[in-house]
Image (cartoon, helix red, strand yellow):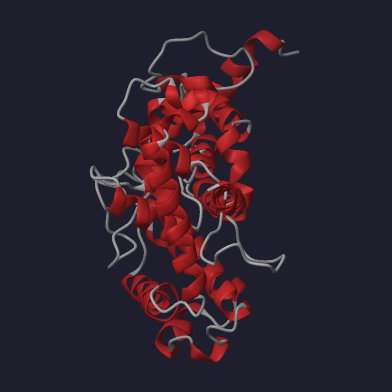
Length: 347
């Protein structure tokens, strides 16, 4: 019988059957601070568990994806989005014989630094804060510093790299906004993020009566399918097929996570449609402007009243602006709304 003391080693041994291009937990580039390995869990499994149990992960359930503090029960939140990304990414990684534990950890942590009010909040903080604000960089800051009373989660390099590298360019879901992920598992999470949000944002926009199923671009749905289920299935199957070299069954010079040109074009067409018909022309623009003003008001207030920041945010030896941004970015939609209401009542 395998004893508790060598469960991790047994799991690490099983990882040797993964693709030669997969990340192996025992070969990790390590953590920022050295620590004893867990006797049961691999390094990537431990990272996944730390993310699930952190405060920032729990707050995702009250952070908006696209629509500001929606009243309906079925709109996507950052938490449900994160779970969808994890499911899609794990399916792809399993099919391609990659490290599913690493994939899951990256997927669960990729949006920990997202602001309240979705991308509206991110845009406002980026305008207000001179060095700029990007949620992928904030997600990395959350796991490296802000969680655990300023100690961070001390995750492995591979998970932190995947979290930082998940953002995409506006024009093409296969383009990289800064640096390409250092692992194939990180690349899987990046494209799984796009598959998830493109499809669930269509569903939310239809639910909000901003678009109809019939208004989706014909050229895209002809390739991808008419329903949410069909579109995701087409995209996932296409990625697996066109990334098959990643399994390592035959020697390949540079195996990569990719899509066929036809499916990629259709997916980008849907993404462009969302920007034109939903993100940039949101029928709830009044609500979006209200959210922008909430973030502006909070930013101005805490710059003038640094002493009102929670103690943990005042403990970092950094500029006031940086601490204020950290505090606001961590807020949920409802918390930010309540705080502004309290400020107005006490002014």
